[in-house]
Length: 141
Image 1: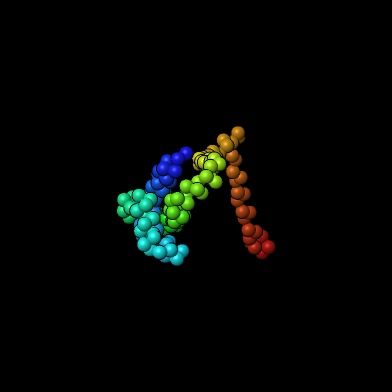
Image 2: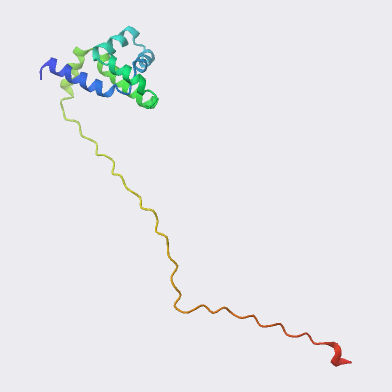
């Protein structure tokens, strides 16, 4: 694969990743990693991500910060090495990566309501015995 083709491929993958990473995210990460901010600007331009980064600025509220910084670090890692070194690093990663299987979604069924079993015989409630009449003292007199 020619270097030009490889670079084009990287750009596509960067664009795909950068939808969640804003320009600011990339710069923040660059600062954290002691990278020159001008370098970060260059990265953004070189990757052709600037436009997407602006679009992402709008989407910023939708994507969580962790997700964005993850995408930003991906961009920094790829472009930070400089495109020439990336093309050489791509030679090593020519092995096809194993695709992770998507998680199986298990749809939980709501528990069935248990119906009361019909009694075979009609229920007979015990009848209370009437209390015995108290013995009166009249008989003793």
